[in-house]
Length: 370
Image (cartoon, rainbow, N blue to C red):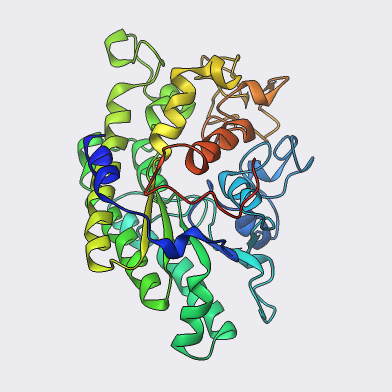
C-alpha cells in the first residue's frame, strides 16, 4: 500500500489518454475470458459451460465464469463500446476490423508457459494457452489489420489494452495442488517478468494505454478457504474471515508488479501504464459487505457442492453433483468458489473507473455511467 500511495503522488496522467477509446484489446484468464475456451472446446465438457452459469444476465452459459458479466464487460459498457468478442470465435475468418475490440483471454491461462510450469511440477488441466500464445494470436491478428508499423501504431494508439488479470493460475495450480507457499513465492518474479515482457512487446507494436491488474486477495476465496481451513483463529482476519497469509502472498505479487510497472514507465514516459488495484477493489467488498448489498455469507460461494464455504472440488458449480445454489447471486461476492458474481465484478469495475483503484486514474471523459 505504501508503494501504491507513493505512485499516486508522483504519476501524472498523460493527456492523450483523456479522450475516448475506440476498442479494448484484452489478455488474461477466466477473469476476462468472454468465450475463447468455450468456442475452442468442441465437446463443451467443462462444468462452467453448463447452467447455472450466465443465468443473471445472458440467461444461458456463454463461456464466462460467472453468473453474468465480467469486469471487462462493465468497462466496455462504461466506455460506450460493445462487449468485447473472443478471438477464437472467428479466428478462422479473415479479420477486417476490431470494432469494439478483441479478447485473447482464455480460462485457465497462465503467465508462464505450460511446459515451463510442468517442469516445476505444476500442471494445468484446462488449457496450455499461456500469455505468450495469446500474444502470438495478437500478432497474427495485426497481420490482417495493418501493413506497416505506422498503421499498427495508429490502430493501437486508440485502443485500451487490458493486461489480465494474469498470473493467478500460475499460483492457483501450484497452491491448490499442494505446493508450499515458500516454493510458490519463488515463481512470483518469473510471473512478473513474463507480464513485463508482454507489456514491452505491446508497446513496441504501438500500444499507448495499458491497464495492468494486480492479483485478488486470494485468502478470501472459498476454494482457498476450503483447502487451507484451520481451527487456528489467529490465521484469519477477524473483520473479513479471510486467511491472512494468503492475502500477504497476493500483496507480495502486487508489490513486485507495481515496482516493475514503475520501471516500465521510466523507459516509456509517453505511454500510459495504469495499475489496476484489483486487490483493494475486491477487499472493500469483504470489509463492508452491507454497504455493497452483500447480505449473504461473504466467504461462501453462491453455487457449489456444500461445506462450510459451499465449495467442493469434487462437486463444482455446473456439475450434477453441485446441489447448493443461492436464490439471489447479487447478495454473494463469490459465484462458484473461485470466480465472483456479476454483482461483485460490477462493484470492482466501479472502483476502477469511478474510484481510486487505478494508478494513474482512468479518465471518465466521453463515457456513460454504470
